[in-house]
Image 1: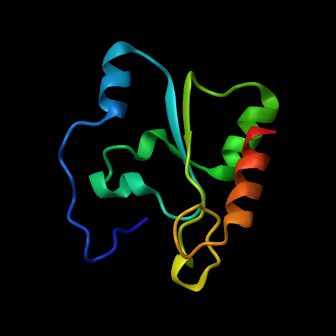
Image 2 (image 1 turned 180 degrees about the vertical axis):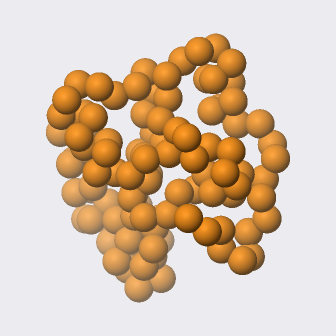
Length: 101
């Protein structure tokens, strides 16, 4: 996974650092681009694909904290599945419904 050339690596502590210190199991699931890439390789060990989220949810093996990110590529064209402007809210709702169910 490579960082976009315009993003500087961040060094500020995050919720993930606090969870690790407390020994709380946690995983960040991404659909296309990992937001945690902004921290370089720091959080690669807790990052996984959305497909792995679905498998873990079906198997009942989700961590105590699971953060799920929708698809963000294609937002300018309206093909992302989040609720940000220019994405289609219907695809964002469908993503949320699939994630919850």
